[in-house]
Image 1 (tube, rainbow, N blue to C red):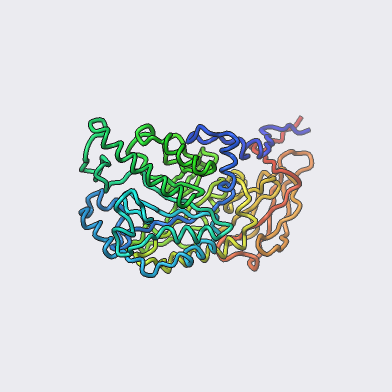
Image 2: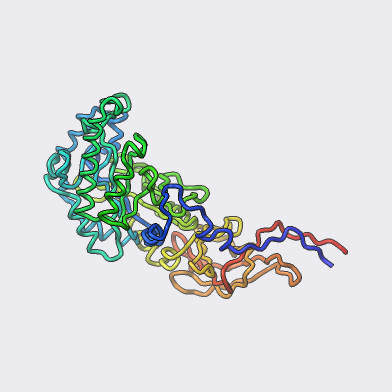
Length: 453
C-alpha cells in the first residue's frame, strides 16, 4: 500500500485571491469608500497616458533636459514660440484611445516645467498665454473624453514647478531658497498649487489625479492632507495615485515591469512605447505591438493595470508608429475582452510555463495567454479540479485536451495537455479559456513518493 508525502491542495482563493493581499500602505483609508471608488479602476486594466508639452518642439526630455543642465532654461522655454498645436484634433485622439480598448486616459496638464495646457488664471505659463497655440488645449480634450460613456478622465499634475520663483528648486545645481529660511515664500507656492488644483477640480471634475514630483518635499510640507481634503470636497470619489505622500490609492511602478506582484492591492505600470514619454524625433526604438501586449497581459496576470503612453508632436498629430500600436491594441482587446476587464490575478507561473494566466472573478475559468506558437500541446500542472471544457477566446472554437498521469489512488493531479492548432492562433497572443468544475484549487506539493508497506 502506498504512503503519501508532500501533498498540499490549496484553494487559490486562500492563496492568491484578491482579499488575501495586504492593503496598500499608500493610504490609511481602506474602508467602504475606498473600495467603492477603486472598483472601476480595478476592472479597467488598460489606460492611455499622454505627455504633451513644449518639449515636443525640439524633441527634448520633458523638464529634465534643463533641470539636468543638458540645455539652458531659456532655450528650453523658447520652444513655446513654436508650439502651435496647429493640427490638434482632440476627437481623433479620443477616438484612437477608445479604439485601443483603454478604459481611462491620463493627460499631462502641467509637467515639472510649469507649462499648463489649460488657461490657468493662477499662473502665467500656459498654452494660451505663453505659446504659439494661443489657446486652451486641455478643455477640448476633456470635453471629448466626457462624451464617451466607457472612458474615465485622469489629470496628471506635477506638485513641483521648477519655473516659479517661489519654488525652492530650479535645477540639480541651482536652488532659490531654503523653505525653513523663507516660509512665507513657500506659503506663496502652496497657494499657487492649491489654486491650480482648484481650477482643475471645478472646471474638469476628473475621475483620477496622477500626481508627480512629490519626492522633493515631504507630505507635511506639501500639505498633502489639505490637498486631498480639497480634491475630495469637490469629488468624494476621486482617485489619487501613489505619488502624494500618505494618501495614494494605488502604486505606480514606472517603466520596469514588476517581476512579482506589487504589494498594493491596486497598481498600474506606466510604460512608454519607445524610450521617451514625450515626442522625441530621434527616438525610433519602438517596442513591437507583441512586446507591449506581452507586458500588458503580464500586468493582467498579476492583477494590475497598464498605463501605456504616447507623445504627440508639437502640431498635435500622433506619430504613425504610436497610432499603429494603439490600433493593434484595439484589435486584440476587442477580440479578447472576455479575458481582460473582469479578471483577477492568475496562478503561479510554475503551473503554466507557456505564458501568462488570469482568472475570472468566480475563479472557475482560467485564462491562458500564449505569446508563442506552441511546439505541440501546451500543458497545465497541478490543477486539482476537473476540466469541463476548453475554448479559444475570440472565436469560441472548442479544443481537445487530455489528462495524463492522473492515478485513481493519488491526490496528485495529472497534467492537462491542450491541443492548440495553428488555425486558431492569434497573430500576437492567443488566449484560451479553461472551464473548471468549481473555483480553482491548486496542488502545491513536491510530488509523491511510492514506497512498499
